[in-house]
Image (tube, rainbow over all chains, first blue to last red; front, side):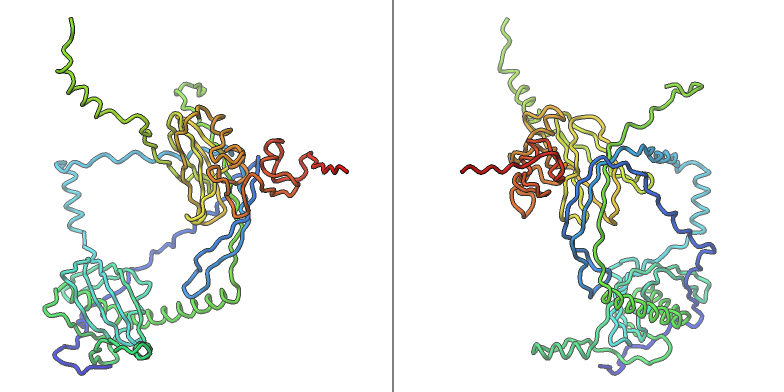
Length: 291
Length: 176
């Protein structure tokens, strides 16, 4: 239901606010090298048949269940060296040390605080989103707002930054809980159960440019800035975000269809145990490495 | 010269109250489960004198299996393991059992009283604290290799309960 616009003011992010995602690292991280297990010499083996039930890869799929063969081997010590010890802790920094104070001052000058945006977003009918925002988790600063942006499109994006018209840079890290509501189905379910559907009154918002109305009276300025910057980000990157969301949904549906057509079975498991010998004795540093 | 008893009594009481109660178990240092090399993991713990250690593992934190070995006593215990599963958990099942003074004692004892030694049970995948580890019946009478000899008989004969070809013959004698 679209309620008539009352005293609430439809707002947009300031035109001179520029928001963007952080640049991807120039060099992609290298995948870890494949692990080559030791060449075990099996001394004895115990074999069991074990019923297992594993959680499915994604919701709405049956659990992965079946009977596996669990092979438990006792093997000879492969003689692997112990991992190198952790490096010793760094020496303490003394607050009165002039060099420490100088470095701290330099860091403070360069430091830009990151606001953690705790956001609960409920998307109604894929077109309007009810937002509860808590900048840096401050419950006393909660702001409730309605947006004409489908916040499902924010899935998968964790950080962004915005630059205001005054050059002020605001960095954000997002912790979002996003859900979707189909009001038609909600009403049908409520009617089936003979209760009233407590569908919230959705304020009238224009389609098109990312817009919002804030329902909270006297909202904290940092909350307003967060909501404005979210909408500035969507204004700049919304098309790509929506495209990425659609692509992810298509990939998810394709994967789900594949898993339904090819139900995975739990894999057999082999466990090896051995008694490790004592670590190599330390040498006394004499030539020839005599103990 | 006789010492007066009464002045000492409060001190004795305080000493008695501050001493550990006889039989209190010594705290067990936690097992350290750390990553080793080549996809292996190391399980290290400091043992307590007189204590028997069973190592259990799980793939799902619900069903726990006994590892096929027993450790005993003080000193540093160093085990290595590697599992092909994505999830793998270890824990210690330990206790201070009366009459158990060595690793041999711990291995040969029969904690669940089903007629099979602890080491036999953990070696062949049974629970040394449960006479019926599986839904198939008492551990002692199970015959996993189907050679007609139950586990208890296999242990007495020193044969492998998982292998039929162990040199033993089951003789069926009928008398008219």
